[in-house]
Each structure stands twice: as structure tokens, then as C-alpha cells.
Image 1 (tube, rainbow, N blue to C red):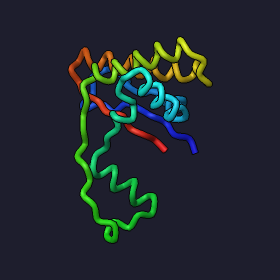
Image 2: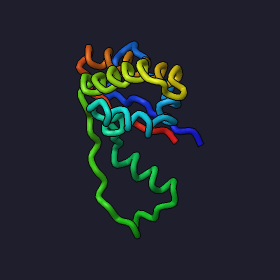
Image 3: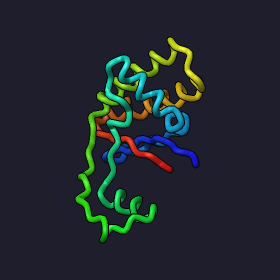
Amino acid sequence: MSVALYVVLEQEIPGFNHSVNGKALGRAASVLDALAAEIGVQPLMEFFSASPEELVGFAESQGVNLKENATRWPTERWFPAEDGLKTVRALTQEIESKKVDQAERILSDLEEFRRVLEVAKENCVKWHLAVDF
């Protein structure tokens, strides 16, 4: 199963395609978290959020009986694009200076995230990270 990380914008930006690949980031999530901790920036996964409806749908798709496992789902959170840019830029710089497996693919995904987050910042649009399984 392939995991991909992607950007969800709080609102659409007219004429802007905010899609990203994110598969290399999904495969390298633990390495990226370790690098973020090492250089003192917020890890990408700390930007993860989803709507309660999405969380319920995912839980049900995984066979979780919600009646037996009643829980209160967190509200969807949105983050300033600048916060994500700080992490993306720092991780890019760190990966460029170190030997990291699949560095080219990771850097390509980070570049896509940077592109989207810069446009989001210019348009005052918040974002969060999502995971596609």
C-alpha cells in the first residue's frame, strides 16, 4: 500500500491547481520527522488534520464499529501557510546538505509543497496536511 501526503487548502484559489504528488514524503515520513526534530522545526505530520466526517469515514472503512467505540472527533484545524513553508524550506535545505535515501524524489515533493504553500500564503489561505492511503 502506498501512502501519500498532500495539501488541503481551506478554500480554493481560482485558477490554481494545488495538487501535489506526496508519495516520496509518505514513504520518508519517519526520516522527515527525525530531521525536523534535529533541526528544530515543526514536523510535517503536526500539520495533519481532517474533518470529523473524514475521520468517521476512515474509521468505518477500517472496520471500526463506531457504536462500540464511541469517541469525540477533533475539529478540523487549519494552519498559516507560512508555518508550513518554514518546515518545507528547512527540510529542503537539510536534505540538500545530507545523504538521504531517495533525496531527489523527496526534494521534488517538497518543491511541490513549497509552490502550493507560497501561493496559499500570497492569497491568505490556510492549509493542513492530509494522508492518502
